[in-house]
Length: 50
Ligand SMILES: [Zn+2]
Image 1 (cartoon, rainbow, N blue to C red):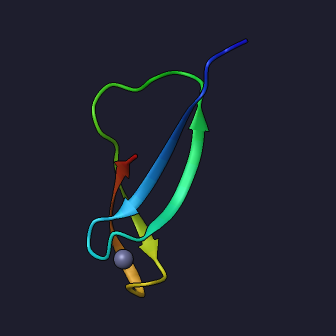
Image 2: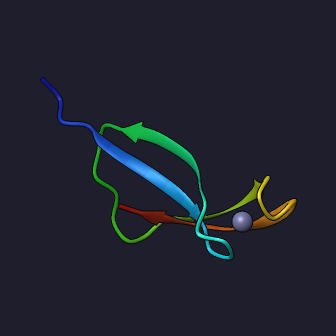
């Protein structure tokens, strides 16, 4: 079986956890994406969190 890693993306402004997905390979470094946060009502930086 392949080990899977769950990646959770949290808004850097309100800390709301808006997105999560799984990946089969562990990624190097922290992931940061510009995503729409419905809590903030705009696009904000989302960072990988645990
Ligand atoms: Zn937010």
